[in-house]
Image (cartoon, rainbow, N blue to C red; front, side, top):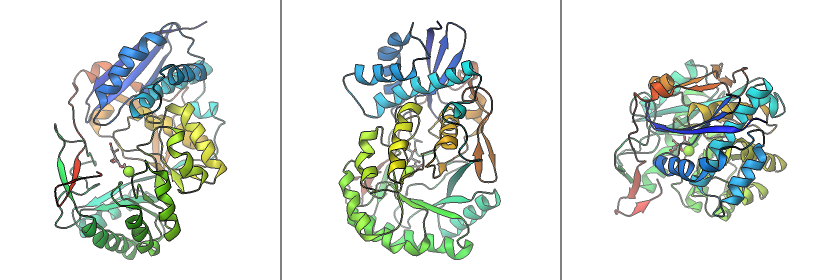
Length: 402
Ligand code: CS2
Ligand code: MG
């Protein structure tokens, strides 16, 4: 019987920080898992190195479910982003190994294709409306059928989602940047720029918007109602989701679809949102929600309530997660859409991936496993640089949700 012989945790910053787990079996088969938690990378690296790796050596890599249950129940301290990201990395690496041993791409182990390709959306943004409109035009020319639109709110300084440079990278400073926030200015301005996008480009593509946890439930209800004529594919994270009940108030006022879940890490965190149909898309991911094994459970629960998938896919999710996401997205029956932000060149000097973008869709590698590689020698050229996500403060100086 094959055994897990080696478990290595790599922390590097090729273009941005990533934590990557590589498992190697006694037959020399390797598997990769993403363990990146943006702004808290070393917490997961330490959880893996100190508390998980010693428990993996000698185990049968084929027993994916058993190892998942062992790491989840055996920790005693359950759930939370650090624990679930560490378990996710092990789980994803074991699915990579299982695919390689079976000689099949992972989507074939998940029931095979349910669709020809994985519809994706990317991020258009601008420091003002004209810049946003030019960016939307650029993504339309690149063939995207779905585009997220975010613009800076005048007079408020830093605003969520506005790119500075090649890609949107919010974790950019050695200490958290404090960004001002004004709900009133946002509520006056955002509907206007979303209307401007529809006015210029019409309705033959999906338009998405990320509120990014900034509103109270009634403010989110007001925003959703105000933008109904923009026919958004979704408004994302309209209000913080710790209180799942809060979404009922939004539901009572607007038909604008709601997407939640990128920063949630277990089925329990989205259970009420799904079973009471308080959301339309669940955004949980391979890397932060316990890996492929747990994510499938969340997506299967969602399917019972006609909630579709809409997984997070920002650049702080590594190419390993993105490859695993495409395998899952290809197979699940209730797929909705996949977020996709192409990684920068430095990242792709360390990671290799067979994922292809074509006509607004992603397609997985057909090679066995996930179809990803990690070059630890190349990674040595990019030592870890700790970076923090920003903190938002209201104009009166009090902390707000970033
Ligand atoms: C955003 C992310 O992509 C999204 O929808 O919410 O940019 C998010 O802010 C980062 O991934 C956080 O690390
Ligand atoms: Mg988001």
